[in-house]
Amino acid sequence: MAATQLTASSVAARSFASFEGLRPSSVKLSSLGTAKLGSLRQNQFRGLVVKAAAVVAPKFTFIKPLGDRVLIKIKEAEEKTEGGILLPSTAQSKPQGGEVVALGEGRTVGKTKVDISIKTGAQVVYSKYAGTEVEFNDSKHLILKEDDIVGILETDDIKDLKPLNDRVFIKVAEAEEKTAGGLLLTETTKEKPSIGTVIAVGPGALDEEGNRKALSITSGSTVLYSKYAGNDFKGKDGSDYIALRASDVMAVLS
Image (tube, rainbow, N blue to C red; front, side):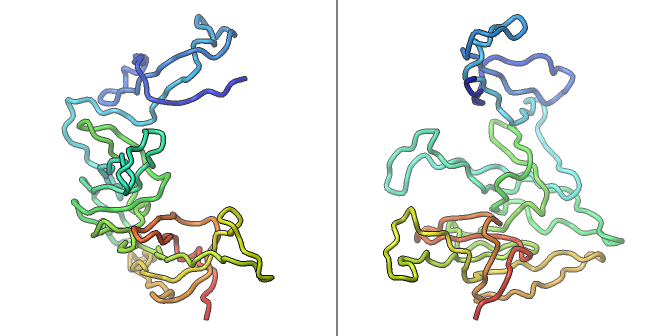
């Protein structure tokens, strides 16, 4: 059986009218096969398009996040390469950053009320699969928890990222060019290293009393980290970086 593809839509779904303020994204139908699905044939469903974002009706002009949640206006995807080549929509990478536009009231840890440490207007980078996407005021937004924000970016280069909470920001070591026996490695056979130099560390996680517990890892350390942890980034200089939690750092090398 052919796979069902999810994309943007043109036929509005009206069966969710009870959700006032949020309207479901529309669904586009085309052919897939000949088996019947209810009153429609399956050949009408190739390229089924369902957009995941909730759409806020125009009559609502403000979204107030609750608790320790943050509302972020998502940065637009790049339409060109650095060399000026136009990218088709399928080749544009999904952005992992945006501007903080609204904050929740914070949360309570033990008996301590902890405010959200990020300010509105801050440019932030967040975990790749975090939060719920919302279309609001003709722009894409994301509602997520403060802890899903990886760090604050005060410049347009990822190397200047300031990690938050218990996260560590690492410049990944260069991949080995040769094997131990001296054989040259091609780009496809070079193994991604799990070693790097710590560029910056966050202020630490909150303890049970709402106080920050400083991380034992320090900037400048060479560390070994878990291979499949964290969020990967590419710097303007072509270097690879990764932001991950301190618990995913397995050892300090010297």
